[in-house]
Amino acid sequence: MSNTTPGTDQPVVAPPPRRRGGGIPSRVMATNSSNSLRGWAFKIVLLGLVDSLAVFAMFVLFMQESWLIFGITLAVTLVINWLYLRPGGLPAKYLAPGLLFLAVFQIFVVVYSGYIAFTNYGDGRNGTKDDAIANIQLTSLNRVPDSPTYRLQILERDGDYSFLVTSPTGEVLLGGPDDPLAPAPGAELDSTGKAVAVEGYTSLAFADLLANQRAITNLSVPFTDDPGDGALRTPDGSNAYLYLSSLEYDEASDTFTDAAGVIYRDGGNGAFVNDDGRELIPGWTINVGFDNFVKAFTSDNIRGPLISVTIWTFAFAILSVATTFALGLFLAIVFNKPGMKGKKAYRLIMILPYAFPGFLSGLVWLGLFNQDFGYINQVLFGGASIPWLTDPWLAKISVLTVNLWLGFPYMFLICTGALQSIPEELTEAATVDGAQPWAVFRLIKFPLLLVSVAPLLISSFAFNFNNFNIIYMLTGGGPRDVTAGVDAGATDILITLVYKVAFGAGTGRDYGLASAFAILIFVIVATVSIISFRQTKALEELN
Image (cartoon, rainbow, N blue to C red; front, side, top):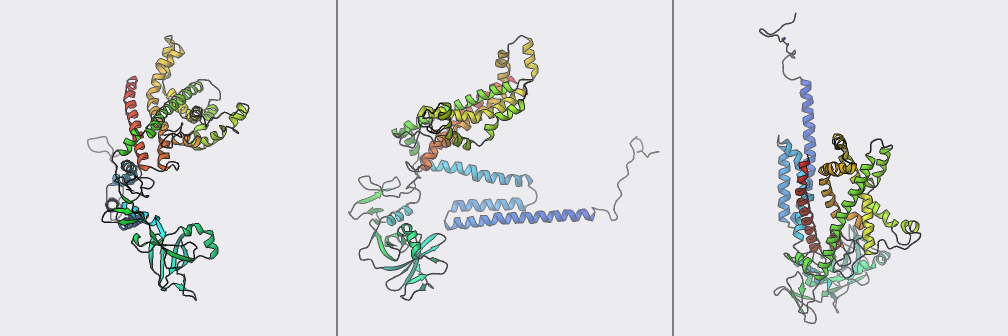
């Protein structure tokens, strides 16, 4: 007979036996304490590594006097330590690393690119005005005719060269391209009193001088901290002479004057300019406002290529989405037929191009399209010499063909999944009502398919709008338009044009103009995406 609670039918459950003395078992407490200690030790080690990196970064920023970044780094470091050392706040501890990486690798990049778009940052204009003045003086050096001879020993450390010189008065000096000459106590002297070695440096032998002759003869070692005092240079690696700048800088008037008396003034565009418009190189970075955007739309040799590239970018993105979607949907319908044998094998073969890296596919197709030795010309067209990649229109067709090869497996996968999610009852009901297969597909399946696929088509458009790999690997944007003021070609899209403007060697590097183009791309893609997503809301009513 079981015990029950008075007045009820519920059995009385005896409480578990208590340990002598009560409380939590000592073994459990020891285990929890051990885990807690290990967790704290692990946390302290990780925080120590983070703090060490932060302190090193702040030291560098302090030496460079980058006070804003220094303050941000200090604040972020303090916040991280506060988050992970205080009890509780578990969600913040998980979110903090993701937010930090988002800020560093996304937000900072976008903001900095936006800032660069409003500057003249680029080749010859990538430093401060003080740096430009010093570089102008160093790059316009001429040997002083009556310069004393400094006996020279070339030293090397960590791949950098330095001058160890012995002045006519016997003073031993050591310096490098970024370090003015300074006394070198403890230098080793030979029998003639010439300094030949310094601890921590490697003295170059004659054979080493010959092997690195060009690099050594191009060295300029500042004589003092003032660039106006000149620099030492060597024509032979054994003797050095004093060189002075042929351009004299007047700090009071902020002008340069050359030997002929021509004056160069600050032209307001980040460079010293004379009355004839000749600039001294290098210049410096300044804010130019909307000049880069105005230049893109008003300069004749840039506006024309930019318009043609923009039109082709839209055509490339739209045709790529349309062709890959059409082929992918067709194959999905074919291989979704009930009772078809070998569907799994066929589907596996269909997705192989998608599994292959895109940039490698571009290189493979580059060989296939070769005009003289490519498989397509030699085998399929019997040795014809068809300029697939050098003719503007054929190059565009080639790019679209390769992108179709790479893109249809993705559309095949998503269309297969979307088709299989449509209830068969709808198709069967329409068939019973007498609808033909085409009408069933057009009026029932396709609208329901778009409900799932439309957002992916928009993202595919955005992807192809910036499809850098296929253009760069297959055609490099060519064939080039030689009349353009920028390095633009027939198959260039906006993103490859940005790359060429920013890093191209043909027309120089203009990071400011490239950043302006990048902002233009962002505005276009964002506008198209917003409009498209608003239009696709109508499809939601089908549900």
